[in-house]
Each structure stands twice: as structure tokens, then as C-alpha cells.
Length: 148
Image (cartoon, rainbow, N blue to C red; front, side, top):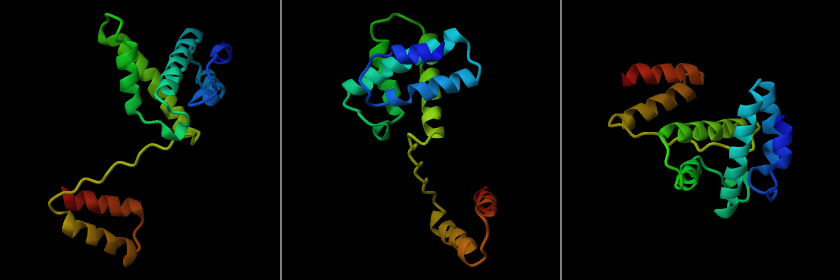
């Protein structure tokens, strides 16, 4: 079922195309319905073509912001409600989750937010790491208690 769609995706083997067989197997293992799994892979084939048009040739160059750009282009010609767009976004998010699980894509690290009290909190957390040898869980708890 899903492997047939992955084989029928006749696109250049760049961007995310090499991961389709594994993604199809993942959908099958999670017992997705044949119709939904085929739709998901079809949307991913279209996304792959969009990535190639944008010059993205490696999975390391991916970013989740490309999903919105793809959806803008893909749904530009349709008069539709938000439901199909939301479904397509969900399908592509599943692909990104799979790529992260297989370590083909590394999500960007969130930037730390500077708070007014960061100037004193950061040295304290470093003290807990170095001098007190706290584990990261204990440090997160301490940070939550101090910051609240």
C-alpha cells in the first residue's frame, strides 16, 4: 500500500525522497489507513518537488518554515477552508517527526529568552552544575522555583 506510493513518486532523489520508503514503513507500522497513508506520502512527494524547486537538495537544509511557504504555493489556486491546509500541515509535520526520529534532520535549538533576572540566575545555575554537581533535572527544577 504505502510502499507502492513511495515507489510511484518519480522525483529526483534529492531532498527528502530517499527517506520515503522508511517513512512509508513507519506509517504502516503505526497502522495508518491505506487511504490516509497514501495521501500523506503524496503530499510529501509534492513537498519534495517544492523543495527541489527552492534549491533544497539535502535534508540538512530543511526547516519547518518551508512548510508554510509550500502550503501558500500549493493552496494558492484553491478556494478552500482551513481544513485541507491544516490536514496538509499535519501530514508534513509527521514527516518532520519521522526525519527527527531517524536523525536525518536536526531541529533548530530554541534560543534562550533573556529575562531581567538572567544576569543573576545564569551564574547560580552554573554554580549548581559545577560546584554542587546537580543533574540537569534538579537544575531545571531550581530554575523553575527561582523564576516563578
